[in-house]
Structure formats: structure tokens, C-alpha cells
Image (tube, rainbow over all chains, first blue to last red; front, side, top):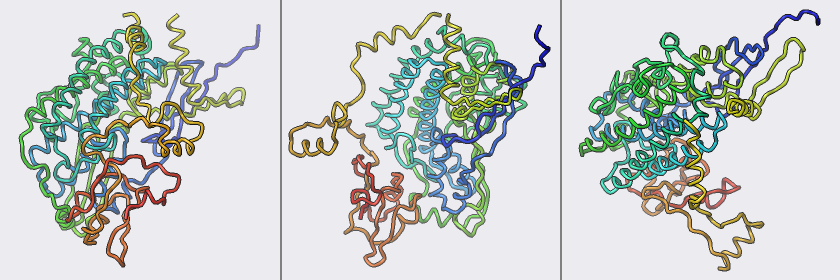
Length: 412
Length: 133
């Protein structure tokens, strides 16, 4: 017989830098064969100095900077910033603006969740579903362009209100698009929840228990999929959410049980798409007529902010979870004295550790994607074989290929 | 259960493609030649999909109306607007513009507006098409 060998583990560092990442992150995996034994996360590799830049600009300019924190949450971030400024300076927002903010925020949630659903399908190698969902997302983007004039960075918010109205001649197009979503929702639900391929790769994969989710302070759909009833829109209603009929979307609404796996996170997001459609309809029905902005003269607003001393907090429910903006004004300058942003992926990143433990390398893409981060962190993976002292690199394509191969293998 | 995507795939095969072939159906071997042919009227261009009302395209500037108050420079998030001190007029570099139309909102005499022109790709960021003055 061969001489006795001691079993050693491999280490796979993932990351740390990719320009497309919102929050640059580095992972170090301990691998035994195909199985993940341990995961370590380190954050803070690339700092864009957005907060620093924002502290040198006036609040109107910072809105557009906040919009560029995240390309997908490009409405929620400026809204959280505006709400922080509004609370710091005691600016009242007109009633109609509150309702229109809900319409745009929910439209963004539909866009984001459909985009996520497509990416998740792409990660397991089911590209036909990617095109099915993105065809629907295209409609949502068209509607965004129709309402705001831009497809992605909407540029529609201002401090103390909203810049564009939804007029009555725009309603037919909105209703038509919402009807399209409703007609196609069942198709999407059937593909994601009943399909054999999806079930194989998502049921009992990447489990996050309720205890872990609470302990790690996860937010948004990641927390709700583990059965935690936590949603800023319900817990601390802002804008017009307090007047609208809504509840926590947990997977047990559909299946009657909570497992906290990838499949549950798909269910949660699909339920939220449906909820968002209903919320847009409700908000448009109930929106009162009236002013859009409390102070239309921007120079007057800026000089008022300059004179104000105070601090404010804006907490909003982004598609990925709660975002938090803190703003402080010193009463002498019009630019913020302090601006602090906490995006939702930051909370969800640590949840990857319990999710990934015990899974296979091929499950990394789908499990990581299930919390809806930027998937670019898997762009460069180095496998370090300590025993044989040789390194080899797995890039995004190879890792993606391994993931697809697992789907093919399971299908046989 | 089962493979639920099979039906959508086969129905898709008989649907008309969504893509609008703008400006021409196939990539021309020589773009300059194509432009010459279009100018001469030999080739027809597929029209682009109509932009919605309120689209944010290239900024239009009414120089006569402008009073040189510099408010647009104060609110511009990208620093795309330059003040010409002698004439007391502004110059907008579209290569820096983020098309937020905040300058349109703040202008007290409404001399700035957004057009629906969107073909603004250029190799030179200081080209004549990308500077509004």
C-alpha cells in the first residue's frame, strides 16, 4: 500500500478587487476536496471616497452623488439622503411627493428583483430564463424612462419632494405595464418554483438559519427568507408606506414553511415583485393632488440648509435590505459636515459564512448570488495547493463553468 | 415539475425579434462610406425608437435669454459648466454632463432645456458637438 497521507485542506482566496463591485470584499475559503470547511471575509479594499466628496459639495449636488453609490438602488440611496437632510433641517414633504416616492421606489424594486432573478438563473447555467426575466425587466426600464426621462440613474428626487409628477395621461401606460407584469408573473413563478433544474440547485443549498440571520444582523430579503419578520417599510414606515396595505413577505406565505435556503430566497423575491406591483397601484390610486416640492426655489433652500444646525437619519428599504444615511450640518457651511452611508449588502455579507460552510465549490456562485450582492467578487479565484506548492487561478469563466457542469451532472 | 422553459422557447422561435435594427440592418464594412451614402440619399436609415416625452438628451441653451447668474454652475453635480467672464455667458461640456437637468430646474429665466437628441458618442471629448455655448 502507499504511504500514509495526511489530509490537508486547500485555501481559495476570492477577491479582493474588482471595479464593478459595490463593496469590494475578499473571501478566503478552506477547501477539503470539493467541500467548503471554513470561510473568512475581509472588507474595505477599495474606497471610493464618496462620503468625503459629498462633504465638499452642497446637498443638491450630493443627491446625484448618492445616486451613484449603487447602480441598481439609484432611487433608494438619494431618497435616504434626502430624508436625512429633511429630518436634519425640518423640511416637510408634500403629501403627493410621498406617494410618488413610493411609486418610484417600488418600480425600482421590481427592476432589481427581476435583474437578480435573471442573474441567479445565469449562475446555474440556465440562460434561457435569464432572457425571459430580462425581457420583463426591459418593460420596467421602459416605464422608468417614461416616468423619469432616464433609464437607470433616475435623477428625480430633490430635498423636500420630487421633481416630476405622474400626470393623468401617463396612467394608461403605467397600467398597461403593470398588467403585463401581472400576466407574466405566473409564468415566472412557474419557471422559478416548479422547474426541476431550479429545484435541484436551490433546495437545501446555502441554508441560513433564523438564529444565524438574527445574530449576523442580515437585512432585506435575505433575512425575510430565513423567517425574520423585518422590513423597514412596515417597522418604521416612511414616505407613504404607513398608509398602504402591506406586510412582511416571508416564504411561508407560499409554502407554509421556512427553510432559509436559496429556494426560499427566490420565493421571497418573487413575492416581493408581486407586492410591489400592488403597492404601485395602491399608491397611484390613493395619491392626493397637490404640491410636489415644499421649496421650489433651490437657492433659497440651499441658504436655509446653510443656516441650519442639526443631524438627521434616513432609513430606507432598498431592494437588498435596509440602507442607512446619516447627515450632519454645522450651521455655517452648506455642504454636509458629516455624511455616513451604510448600504445593505454590508450586513448580508457575513451571512455568506454560515451559508457556504459545507457546500461545494460549484455552489459558491449561486449561494453568493442569492443574497443579491455584486457577483463580481468571483471574478478572480486563486486555488493555493499548500501541499504541492503550486498555485492555479480560477477566473470567473472557469468558476461559472464548474457551476454549470454541476447542473448538467445533476440532470443526468 | 418538469422542464417548464421548453414551451416559452418554442413560442419564442415564431415571434418577431424585439430589436430595432438602428441605424442599419447589418454592421457596414465601412462606416464613413455608409455616412456618405446616407448623405447622398442612396441608403435609408432605420428610424430609432421614439424617445418618450420628457427625455433627457443634449442640453439646449438660449444664449440671448441668459443673464449670467451662475446658479446652474452652483448646482451642477459634475462641474460641467464653465463661466465665460467677459461675455457673462456659460459653456457646457457635455462630456462631463450627467443629464440630471438640475440646471434646467434652477435657471430663473428658463434659458436651458433638454432636447431629445441622444446620439452623442464621440472620440474627442472637446468636439464641437459636445460643447454647448
